[in-house]
Length: 504
Image 1 (cartoon, rainbow, N blue to C red):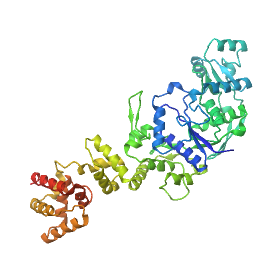
Image 2: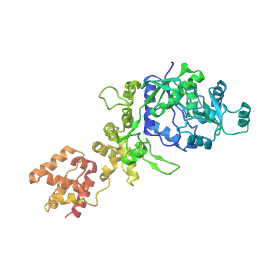
Image 3: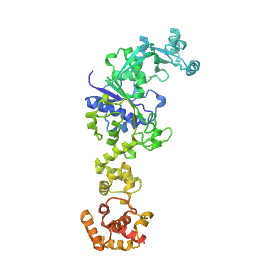
Image 4: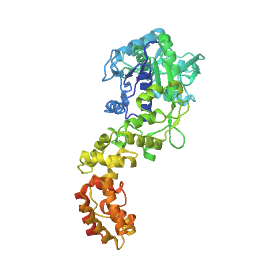
C-alpha cells in the first residue's frame, strides 16, 4: 500500500456534530503521523436532506479548529470533482458494471408495494428470501424491464446478495468482524429518480478512485462495512480495499445512549463547534467558539474521548497528538462526554493563551454590550483575571467594573462592611491615596497604605473591604492594588468620591 490517504466526507444536512469533529480529527492525526494526505469530500447524494449553508459551516468549523486538508472541495486536487453530486457520470459507469456482471438488479417496487409487503411479512427484508416475490428484473421479462426503463418509470438498482456467505471485515480497532451475508438485505445502490447513487455505492467508488488507504469513521457505519467489503469483491478491487477503523460512540454525560443535541440543551453545553442557525426551522444552537472555548482546548478534549496515549499526560498540543496518536489504541467502548472536563481543559488553555488574543476576544464582548474597551487596559485586566474563568466569554461579565463604575452598591456587602465609623476612615483614606502619584508601583502603593493603617491602628480588613466596595460596588475583583493600578489615580479617586457621597 502506497502513501496513506484518508478522507473526511460529511453530508451537508445541517451543523457538524462534535462526534463528526472527532472523526475528522482522528483522520487528520493519522494522516499527519504517517506523512499522508487528508481529503475533504462532500457526500450530497441525498438531495432531499440538503441544507443551505451547511457545507460552508462544516468547512469554517474545521478551519477554526486548525484541521487542515490537503485536497478536496474548495482545496483542489487531482481526484476531483470532490462533491458527489458532480460525479453522476462516474457513478453511472459503475452501476452499469454491476448490472452487467449480475451483481445488481433493477427493482420497480413502489413505496406502497414495499409497505404492503412489510405488513404481510413480519420483519420483512428485501433479500434472497423475498426478492422473487417483488417487481424487479429478476422476476420480469427482459423486454418488459427495458420498456419500463425506456418509458421513464422510476426504479432503483439493488445489490444482489447471495445468502450464507461468510464476510470478514478487518478492523484496526475491533479486530476481525465475521458476518453472515444472510443478515444483509439487497441494499439500494442507485435511484433513477435523482440519477444519484446511495451512500453505499458512492463511497466505495470514490474511495477506490481517490486511492483512499484507510477509512476511519464512526461506529454507526460498522453495519454497512460487510456490504462495502462485498462491493469491493464485486468490482474486483480486493487488492485496493482500504483498511477500516470504526470509532466508538460519544455517549451521553448521564444515562445511556448516543450524545445528542438535546443532551447539550438539557445540560447546558454545546454539541456543535460553531453556533448554528438552522435555515429551515430558525432555531439557533450554541457553538464551542461562541461559548468561549479555545480551539486548542476543544481539540485536546476531543482527542481523549475514545483514545488514550498510554501515559498520564492530559494537556497535549496538536503536534503532541500527532506524535502519540495510534488507531489501535482507540477504545472499542463508547466514551462518556464529560463536558465539565471539557471546561477544565479550556481553563488550562486560557492560562497558557496569548493575553492579547484573550483581550481582543473580551473587547468584542464589551462592544456587544455597548462599551468601548481599549486594548492596553484589556490586556492588563486579562493578566490579573484570566485565572478566574473557564470560558473566555466569562471574562467580560466578570470584568465589566473595570470600565463601568458602580452606581449602586451591594446591600449585603454594605451591611457587612460599612460600619458607622467607616465613612470617616474612608474619607481619611481618600485624602491619603490622593497624595500617592505612581499607581503602577503596586508594591510601593500597598506598603504606603498599610503603613498608614498601622499608624492609625486601623485593621486591614476594616480598610480594604470598604475600599474595594467603593471601587467595585461589591466585594469582588483582583488584589486591591492590582485593581487600583488598572483604574489609575484619577478614576480611583472619582469612584471614592462618588461612593462617599452615596454611603452614609
